[in-house]
Image (cartoon, rainbow, N blue to C red):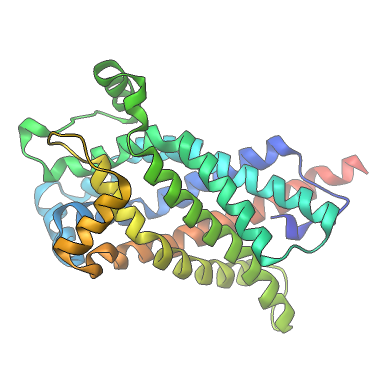
Length: 296
């Protein structure tokens, strides 16, 4: 990210967005099976092992890549936006103000997450429904062939506004996830560098990403559980508000139910953060190596 470059050398804004999208797709593809397992756990209220066995029994190995097209579309909207905005704002702020404090990093991450989540809500909605289909009776299944047909089907049957069902919880979750993930990743890198035991490279990026992933999961999973329930709501009337759903889960199923699926969530989030952030860093480094000398 911008920590790799001097204040006088910045990656062009459009390159930040391209790198963000590519890095998001890399992270999602490597961890998609765990994303599938997490969503199915949140809906079916079963354990990690039982969910994996059920997926293998009813769908087979291909069941772990259900919704992959929607997931890729989501990353091309969500991650392109959030990572593009974050790295661009980080570069600009660092250029004018020098080394940023933790609050600024969190704030930039939250702004990036809100915008990215809003743009990514339609594809996120299709992704959740495609993964959840296995748990629904045949007459209630969405039966989207891929992410594109899912978007078209929702828009045609329910109207364009329906594509943003769950937008508010998705944006709230996006603010928390990105504020925590991106802010703590940047801060962890600086803290690890300050110890004197690390230098810029993949090992430093890996350790910072693992710290960031743990904190992000703990802070954001309750919102993710609520978001999933709202987006997969199939019975009338319309689903209640985000916080009403969250409170209802806690009252009926216990507080720990808000962290249901933590194992696959962290098992996905940690490597996802690692693959995504290392991709961002290395692609930025590659760009600087290939093109920055030409600009001097």
